[in-house]
Length: 331
Image 1 (cartoon, rainbow, N blue to C red):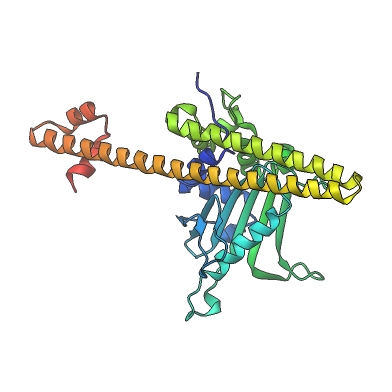
Image 2 (image 1 turned 135 degrees about the horizontal axis):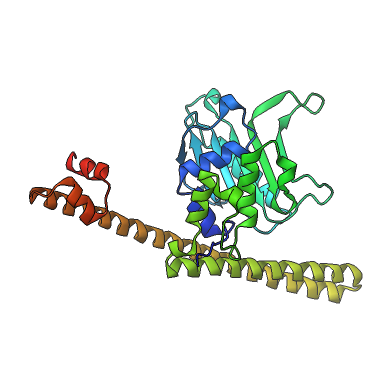
């Protein structure tokens, strides 16, 4: 029986939205605050790693980054654990993407807006039931006056309820896909399966579509999330103890423990980067195998054609559609 993998996992999230521009466009057009005359028509993927222009400055890594035909940049991040510095990080990443649009000799009027979409599996605004948060540079006294440049949308999945977004049906379906699909699901709900793009996204998350090596990376990511969560919960508990404790000796001991936790976190970050590198290597190998398979099919089509076989016969042998065979023969 088929089993789905969780699309919030780093591996599956990038498989769905980082490799299939049609799904990324549909997702962004549904959840981002874009008017009908400013919808995205096509995208070009950009490198996820933003390397600074000045040596020694901080690199940053996002999940998916792209630009549309007009030059607008979109940064998409899936965050499993909330941290207090996350908002600073998304502003940092967006600002870096904004300023790197221009060379020294280019004019400011060429700058295009940068939009950040951050999907949070945890809660960050505990004082509100609102799950959709849209931030822009606005006049505080007249919020209709907006300076274009940076916009941020933060979505708290745990607070999301489909009935709250009845007027935005497609957006609600996408958020249901992210919130509900996981390893426990063996059958896609009918409302999700009825949408062609979401059905495609769900099929990309089927366990059978991943190699054993990729599944190892998938599970390793969850191990990292659980370990990071344990460390943070331990830090919070120790922080509470620190607030109640008295005396310099105890404070010094807590400082030592905090340093140890930070060292453990740094090690986890190194391991996560290694997993990322392994995933990229697996992806490269997968693409190479795909290219080799296509080359073998092309050679089989050409040789079969030279041998006098009809297109229908070649199609039956190779499993290719007649249109694909004609395309190969016409190259």
